[in-house]
Length: 370
View 1 (cartoon, rainbow, N blue to C red):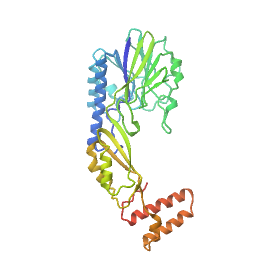
View 2: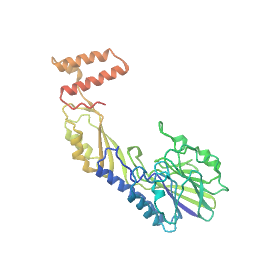
View 3: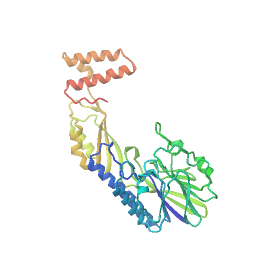
View 4: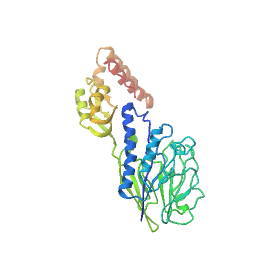
């Protein structure tokens, strides 16, 4: 039996620039990604894998440093004679200035360079056919017209199952499941989608390992690597739980709270030093509560690996009582209620929001337009 350990979408040297993280926290996250790749190599050695495969996006070409290139080379070198096969993806394409092209790699490493599939024998009777992204925007179906010469082979590439392309996103090396069947290969090891998946679940023909660690809040849940066993032309595939980092989103209802200290205590109670957390404040907020997001962050961040606080509360005003006041604030409330009653659809929603923003301004509260 031949065992292949497979990963993809590690995204070493990810910038995290759009995640609202400080440079220090972003740097710590990048170190976690390095640790994931290091542990992947550890696992291959501990389990006696006969080969390792990487289905693209091992690093991010726009940000990768020479130091990270040398780190990758050193980790793959640890495998000794164990074959390591890399199929570059859209974030780490094989281009002239890529670290794939510039570095000298150990003898056990094969980096596929072209869109056309090429074979590498990893064990007696077991060949892996790999193909590469040679540009960041490969839109062609790499499987079109390709057939393996006989059965029992494994495909390795980075591509989009067309059934799963997110709305508004381009497809990279798009394919349909039947395209894999048409090649005559026994199995396909893939990269691109960050959620682990065996397909079809009852008798898998291909596998996405997902990213070994989550990269943002859209990737909550278990993260894995793939183990593929090949025995006399039969394929057995399994997902191995692997990730250590956890992204979690919590909702905290502030309705009924009378002070910001209650909100602070509710957030702190969710604390977990291993969790990258987003706490979404919801509910009707008592106007007397001074809810400063910065203050809440400063007092609660130490309880988490990383903390993001989002305010989606609504002021809990007694609008009917305010409208009865003989004040400018009361007159404003009466005017806006009258406008709300005489409008519909989007205009009504705008008027309702304007009423709340106006009352916040009268109370000298920070107005947060949503």
